[in-house]
Length: 363
Ligand code: HEM
Image 1 (spheres, protein in one colour):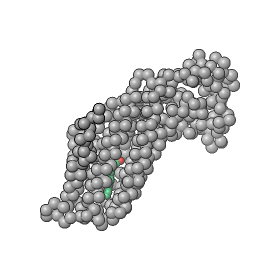
Image 2 (spheres, helix red, strand yellow):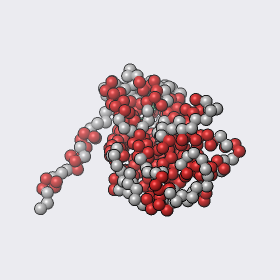
Image 3 (cartoon, helix red, strand yellow):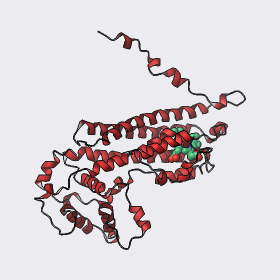
Image 4 (spheres, protein in one colour):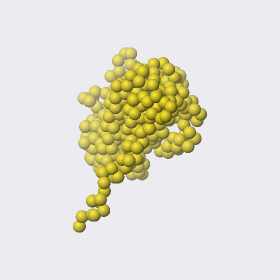
């Protein structure tokens, strides 16, 4: 029998269009002001962004739920869904990059007609955008001009919003969950390496002894120092002559064990069992790139729109945004793994028992 109730659902009610379409109130249209035609575009574009931020947060909640599980089977439905939804996040961000360009149809003079009416509100106060960054794993203290975020005065967040952002930062973030997932990968348990034909004697795991050696041999004269970076990144070996400043540049957000697992996945991604894991790492890097693309498109648009004037949110304006473009990456260390790749033909041959196991891994 058809469900009679569902037949009565009406398009505009289901979508609550009276709420959404009744939410555009340009201040310049209020009595006493001179109506600025482009303020409507300005409101709608922000609202459209906020709707998409909501969808991204919804997907991230789901994805973090999966990576938060104690056991994840890398060949499971869970993993496929996590990947699928990460790709959706990446697509939405790609759309938002395009969307910024609509503002190119508003000239700086058009914007000036209503800009003063907005002060001190600003996209800087977009709580959903901050939650999105925090959920991915961007930490307050690693931000460009961290001081801007901590104030709750004019142009900053109100107390409730500031607290909500802080709470998300302290909950397990996607980067931390990814770190734990990578750390749990059991590739290097010695049981799986009994028949491995090692080429090098050294103190590390037999695979890494060989890999380190091949990597070192492949470095050019100008790159010889990279072996120290390798030792520090993957084995926390601190070179005697390396200054703290240099170390802090190298220090990764992922643990050495997680970095080893991520590199191993990248190296042996042609094994079908690594496909999902590889795609997940790759999509995280894509998400960072799309966000960076958005930051850059927004920065360029702001530069054109207000030049070197300070932002309505009380930051230095385009100067601040430019700093954020270069600093606000979450998955930079995963992208940086390319530094440590070797040619495919030189890859150590994996032992049979590991290859067998790779088909059944469920960590
Ligand atoms: C005329 C158009 C726009 C101008 C002139 C503009 C200007 C600015 C400026 C100057 C800032 C730095 C903070 C401040 O001091 O205010 C900022 C931040 C921000 N704006 Fe816009 N914006 C525009 C459109 C948009 C749109 C359509 C969005 C979409 C949601 C947006 C979202 C943001 C976000 C999320 C930030 C914080 C960025 C970060 O901290 O990395 N803005 N904007």
